[in-house]
Amino acid sequence: MIITLIGMPGAGKSSAGQKLASLLGYEFIDTDKLVIDGSGTGLQDIVNDLGDMALIRAEEQSILDLKLEDNCIIATGGSVVYSEKAMEFLKAKSVVVYLDVPFGTIVMRLSNIATRGVVGLKEKGLHGLYEERTVLYRAFADHIIEVGRKDKVVDVTKKIMEEVLPESDAGIDVNAG
Image (tube, rainbow, N blue to C red):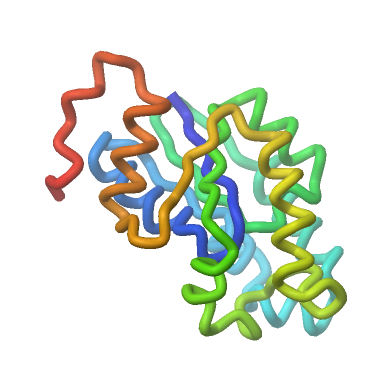
């Protein structure tokens, strides 16, 4: 099984993805890291130097270049939903899970928002992006995981496992590792 996590910056995609991959013995792929490794620079540098579309294209290409095999967890950048090609690829190859985090929680988690390389932030602001992207995340998701303000990584991981994994994998102890 391949699971792709989508959601806003600060939703916990990488943290939950790493935990889930560790518990299941799956490979973990972070598309932000692929973009950084491929470009040799940070996400914010791409946005500053080349613009939002350059980051969207870089993420799209990093996803389309993936040679996906079974048993992996993919954590995407928050702007992945701006690329229909990338989302069609991910939907064809994986189960897409949207981590739906309340706006207030996103704000609390993003103390470094100005340096994260967030596409559209200057033009729309964080709330505008949240409103715009929520519609897209919901449209592309196979599963929506509601993440509460007090949910920890282990709680989110457990919710994903209960919602997405086949019954045969349900006995895994999420508190391990």
